[in-house]
Image (tube, rainbow, N blue to C red; front, side, top):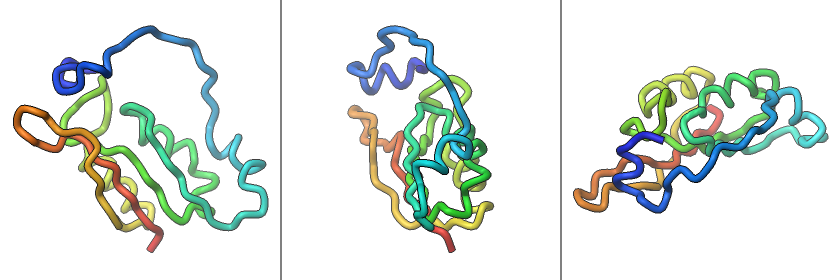
Amino acid sequence: MEARHSEVAPASQFIKAIDIEIARLDTVAPPLLGSSRRALLKIDTQGTELDVIRGASGILERIAAIRVELSFERLYAGQELFDEVYAHITGLGFSLWEISPVLRDPATGQMLQCDGTFVRK
């Protein structure tokens, strides 16, 4: 987490690191999707959104919509910002449908993060 994030959301401070297993969505999702032809992909992964989308390349044809957290300022080390994530998702054939504010700077009101919903064209 970057200092800017702690500054505007002090309750979101780092507590501890934990080890997790990482797997590609296109490996683990097919049994969960079953015979569903269309699904919503919800991504809230603290700055690794494009990694998740890249790991879903094998199931993207079954994704009707993507809801993803988008940042306008770097809140997590190494994260891609709004412009890059937007360009990547629209490049996959999705259109921005809706933006919902998630995090604002309480001192200025500036929107720092939003959830974006993209639907397949």
